[in-house]
Length: 298
Image 1 (cartoon, rainbow, N blue to C red):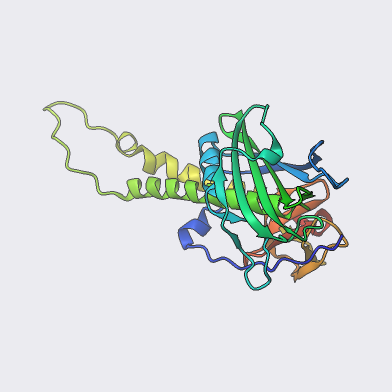
Image 2: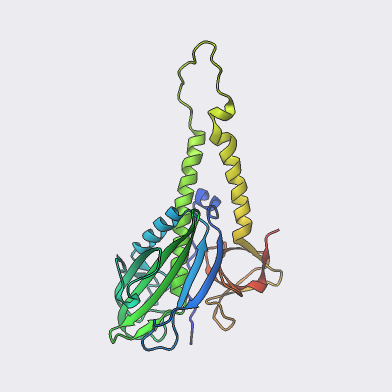
């Protein structure tokens, strides 16, 4: 199977968003499992991406819903000159997956009349891409997110994904979670910086409120948030070892090399598998690095 490298576009983040890009989520594990009974004509079943996300369930549901409605199938394309696949739409179901019988909230995104999409096995015809997202609460502040993708051509042949679409769709979900939480932090910071309105004088003899009671956000919340940001940074970032690293297009030694990453470069962890990390570099490039080429931050 030939896997071509995906040109990855660098993204610029506003200062506030960049400052809080790691807050509110910690990615614990990603499991590529086999979904039985999925492929009609290929022996290779498509990968299922399952990730535990440490973020409030409401934030995860909102982020997944936004990605399901963004009109893009991430991680694939049809034409070399246009490497973003537009034209998708959210849907209430996708017949290729059948009716979901499990727990959780299910979202679907479908793109019709797609010509030979990349990163689906042996896709050489026109057909439909279906993406399914399942969000299952793990606890009040964590969820399990599952992403599946499959291409069905005009002959009703099922072409399994090679994993690029699932990981790219999940990366888009992460970006939306970061945006949701960054906006919340901005509102909290704005409230601490706001000039207090004149208060009604207290009756004679009444005690005045202390500074801590009058401004609890300034005295407690902001320092705690800063400590939380730093702690999360060490959990979701790693550093390239002194030998440097190769950024791969897929989690295999034989996959195409997208670029060489310099020693001591810091990378953001996007997806975790037993031997490979899906990462984002400082310049916004995404790919895979073997775990032996990364080390914790000092």
